Image (cartoon, rainbow, N blue to C red; front, side, top):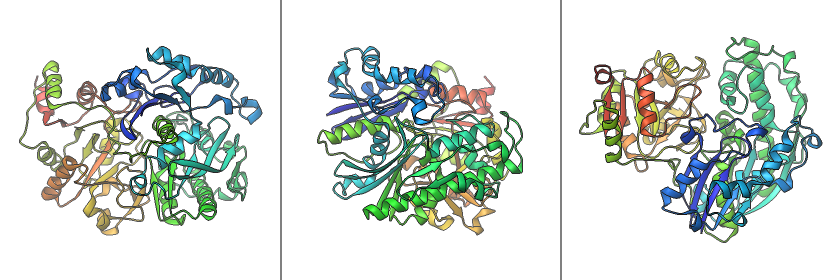
Length: 553
């Protein structure tokens, strides 16, 4: 069975292709269109589809539209109600629902040859849940064993939360939370109040929270509370009463950091109660997470530590982009397909060595082919250079995981400010470490290991904090990516080369992009980023482009 999954209605439009139970391709439209998040989540943009991503998925698999058995769309308009009936202030939401109701026609226009009757709608939170529980490593040898799933985001058709259990590909829903109550919308509102872009910059609030103390907790607990039956309530919060509203770029104060810390802690408390209710109901040993809230790596670690589950797995494209994959997996499972685990996050575009060399020749840039690009990069990093790393297929989801990354030396404390300057980011934001899997337990604790998708935080051992200061956040934690030589041999070889030269098995890893732009995806993007940012070396496939040679042209 060949199923193409589509996410389009709100934000992060994406496409994913599942063939005979195997995820063969997945990509976000932003990587093709170069518009951050693909589009803004406004009703007037609801009709826009991930046309470029969808066509690429088919091309990658050598398929035509006519070869597909189904196309899924991760929103079921029949479950929606008018916004005002749900207590939402969204006066143009009816336009969004109109577009959703015509999705099959829009898709048939975008993908000539598609029969509109082949389009299947999948409820938004069901698609989220499937993207995690049906893609998790457990499906390989535990298909018949129950796996719990917890979905939390801003909104779906009429809810903001789903708690359920998957067994042999079938979902049993235990609880949903009706709108307007939404932990995702609560966090979005705070994001906007703090001067950031809502439905985009929530991770900045999580970073800011580490600079504050939760001194408004009593007041926020009165407004955000669980209901004892697996649900929760979020009452309207007068944010201005805690800290004044910030304009974009305006300096924040301790009040703002304390407010961020308060909401972050209350989020963690509520998630613990929701997970505890679900585990007590099902007795399951394992939990999967999805929805935008599941990208909160601090909260994920609290759940890992204290929820009582033996294991927790988070899908790397946990936000709305992941519902493209979830919709396809849901339909395949419902049709009787036995699914395979997600093979990794590197599900996007890639280029052969010959293709990359042709890009370099076309750009007329001086380049070289070292004996081992991993060793050449390790040498540059050891000399305190900043490296743009472009290798293999691009990542699905918001994290750079060793395929489209900016790398630097973690032992130089000034490299945090340096990289934030390179990327044009706020200076309070941390950068992450990638570490050899076998060395990770010596340096990092509390969070799960392995942690290949950078979706949990870990405590940095005291004796290592002065050795790798650039990756240690203000609270002594780091958002770790562990690197397994079996699955990422080139990255592992680079890390080993860096350790031989410096004694450090850790390298700074942040996304290869600049502020407000999507991650680099194709070779042209990489060359443009290298040409416009103060980066010392571009490692692209087996080739390297050096800053000295670039400027000497």
